[in-house]
Length: 322
Image (cartoon, rainbow, N blue to C red; front, side, top):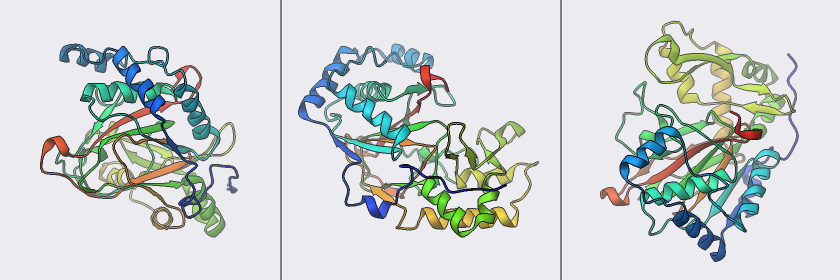
């Protein structure tokens, strides 16, 4: 097949954006008060039993119930930037200080609901996930990337958008890094068109749901989008762990070369843009056109001070379709 470069605002270089703050949105004090009022109006301090019911059934927080008269239009512009612009944005100043864990959940769900539809996350189908180091072994086949403090390779999540709200950063490390997967794609097309074609072929992936055949499936890393452009779904850790599948063939030499090239490019300073999360930072990433990573981190010994993020998955399809 003939693979071509993809043009548009989704192609950018981190080296060109480091001195550009246009991707940062700093909330005003009026915005912060609006968020706090919406959190309290949502009645987030519910009983634990009721909270579990809500998590099991899906979020009760919606754009209609979480009213943001002046911040709402700002979040709609974030949605436009995600779908038609660079594909990422960082909101700073979400008022998480002094909020309980449940209130932080409400704030995250309410803000995200103005950007897209909430997608339930496996295995329980909860509307959000707490990202903490649980001491899980990163080499274990069932360990998820949010359960340990080790470095994460550049990857995309399996929905249109992933959002991360920082409640507390780590003692050190844990930096978030983002690259334009469109820019990486185009560099592969320019320098190794033979490997670019390999990225459009089926690859084996691992769901890490067990050892049976249902844990493994095939899809290409790159796929042409019906509306134009390309969607890139990459996760080297899950590609490599798929090799444990009894019916999964070993990587071909071309696949190994393609992964090596992708890993080199995504770690090239020309492409990377790093963000040092602070409390109240809310990052939105379009998984079709960006890849993200995290450096390893060291936590505080006290549980109340340890790194804590809230992760949400969103769809930008009309009517909240997956």
